[in-house]
Length: 102
Image (cartoon, rainbow, N blue to C red; front, side, top):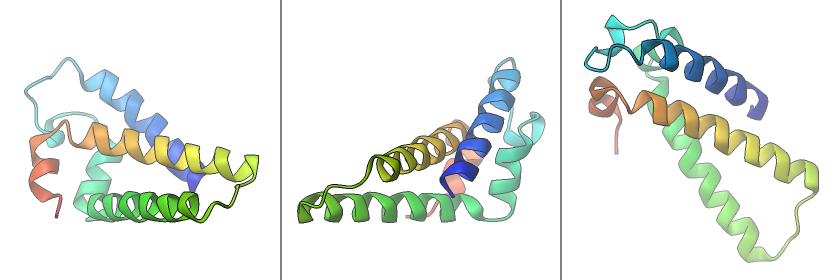
């Protein structure tokens, strides 16, 4: 899942850089296909819930005092960065903010 989030983040970043010329455009007026797909299929809220769950598990893991392996830390970092980039790019559009649940 971490690898997939990283790939989606890279695509989203490339599409967002192309769409930067249209600052006042909606998501449907830009070429940001990856973000549009996430928003249309209701997956943006799923991404947010995954991030919240990840951070809760990460805190619990750190409180327990267990030391994760280097590979686990790297994958967790990739997951968090990838999903964070996707959420950041999506939330730069007002319609994505309006559809994100509590």
